[in-house]
Image 1 (cartoon, rainbow over the protein chains, first blue to last red):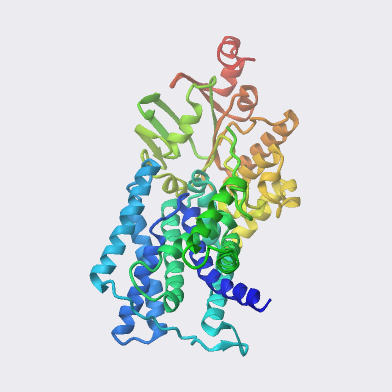
Image 2: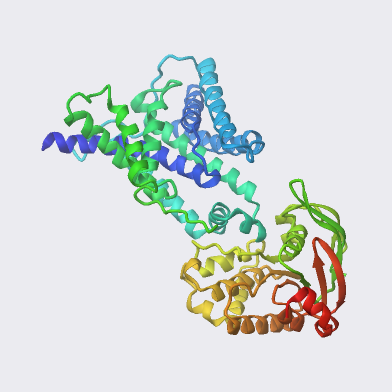
Length: 292
Length: 235
């Protein structure tokens, strides 16, 4: 029982990161109807920027904020420069563009900061939380930050005109143009927000997995699994899915013989396949019905 | 002239849908485009709003707007109720109305205009927080007109407002359109298959056939000419 509880808590902590990435994945999916395979590399690059700023002597929170702002700007830029031109291209061309972005970011990070593993600080420390060893303060902070971001997004989308415009642009671009919404800029804004959310996720996970160009590979896969499980159309679903994947991953790794550490990543793929087979809209997603 | 269209061509890919179409709508006027299915009526409206590739001239308030982006045309005060109504089905009735005023900044006036829409269409007030997708066809059409009015447009483009509605609802809708035109002075260009109804509301009619204007006459003249009615309007 103690072991089960421990694994569930650890799963929740990992799940917070997957939830962050899933949130970023869903933001982009809502804006452009595709998965962004370079999402993880964008987050990794953002984290390196924060690391560099701190290496130059800036305090953690200043570096954190600057990295988030820079990521937002870079997200907008990527949309305008890279994805606007291929917007109407066939899906495979777009996938190739995503993969190109993936390689460019991965290799440039390796070129600039090399492939040695770096440690990344956390302002929350690694002290036991509530005097127990089940979860430490950094892990608790990850969960808190993820839920906080979800709440902010909810307020933004439900409570502001800009949020309403973004929802309208995603739901029905043609009608959105007919009420004067600049749909292209809404897409760019979606990219910026996804990049900023990814940056937060990267900086939260870096203290755990350590900083290096390939740090986000597995994380993004789990993020995809979380987003698919929760439903690609629902931010709250993506967060719930992310947490669920974290827990499933940990429990399977501990209690199913042969899975262990090495095969844990397979769990993410299995989750994706099972969900797509039996409930393609995910737990909280909605079925999109279109009239012919 | 508020809207002056001349020599308008429109294309879907390689296919030309309009050939040198010309017509105009003056400030505060109601005019109608009639014609059979596939004559190009919807395309004319889409061409004005930059939703298809065009050649020729579209002048709004003296400005040449052919080829402009849709959202820029809308910002000049052209509201378009498109084919299929363009409702944001997953959003609430009130959110749909707020979206109509997305280009405006005057909060109190927007709130007042929402009230005005509810006054014109009382059933929308009852359903204000309901998802727009759950409304009946007639209510959705009223919502679409209300959303367009939220722009405070100078020109309202209506694409088959009577489509799929029960006759009684259509009567009601057209009565409201007539009242709105009288009260606010918004000009209207109405595309209709229900020619009798459109000719009642409009002062002037254009008849479209395979992408060309084949007749341009006062509504009363068109309505009175039995051979035109039989040949083109089917009543």
